[in-house]
Amino acid sequence: MQIAGQPSAPAKISLPPNPENFPVLPRCASDKLSDWAARVNTTAAFLDAWKSKRPSAGIVQADGEDSCLLAGRRPSKDANVALSLVKNPEEELCNVKEELAQNLAAAPANSSFTVFGNMATRAPSRRYQVIMPTGRKCEVNNKCPVLMFFHGCGRNAMPHDQFVFDSKCGANLESVVVLPWLDDENERWTLKGEALHEFVVPLTKQLLKAHPELDGDRVTVAGASLGSGMAMQAGLLHPDLFSAVVAGGLADGSHCAGDDPTTPAVPFDAKKLPSAAAIPTVDSKNWKLKSITIIMGEKELFLDEKVTAILDVLDESKVSEKVGLHMRLYGDANHPQCSIMGFNQWQGLHQFFWGQKA
Image (cartoon, rainbow, N blue to C red):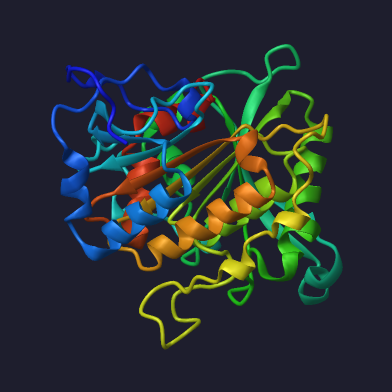
């Protein structure tokens, strides 16, 4: 539905990940939603899938730092759900050139973790890297939030490159960044749930126990492409451990491009997402998960399937009743580009990642 009222100037702010923290947005000056639906078939299908599941939820156009409400309810604490459409991305935040991007498999490891179960039968340990903030000191009385980032199939992780290759960005880091690595190229983050239960969860618990200066109430899980599936799986299955999820270029976490030669993109299998029955009940007193942010690109395949699948899971598990949801679509962006734009051209997300201020 279209919001009534007179149009006014767009809000000059980079939107935060959680819609409950959005500013009061004015109505857009014209019906730009129709323009979006007319762009390409994938976008039209994406919007139809969203509106069929969230008919009254806010749809926001975010051009650079100018944001206005296209349709639906204004996002707020009582309406903690939004779709943001981005035609003109914000400026790059960190100087991370493609030729400088470092493959994590070649980067020096500073720690290793003894894994369990089936992962241990292939190799006894997996590497991980911890990046400590330089802009603040983590103390028991001044704890640092944690960002755990899962790499994609190319073994790249944007937060690592932002910190390493841009000294200005590195100096602004106030979170502790944890980068778990899959050393075996044949391993997949969400396959059979092995990495979650035999590596990621026990690693997280060990770090929080060993370092009381880390804030166990503010642990974000995020990832790009293959890693986005791991972030979704970790957050939904362990909402008592992780407080926020950010999925860039949503994938199921068990496939890489080339795994299925008949598909000209990263395959997506909705059945690989966590089932509603496996997700803890939302009335758990230990529940910490507050927000889920999903970033997609207009040129990706399976957009409508992904929207429908994830919203079905959130609704059937009743997670949507308790957790804020922000879907963000970048125009003219393909699968890898949408993650880069989200992680390096979205100030609101960067501020949340770097210091969890929003």
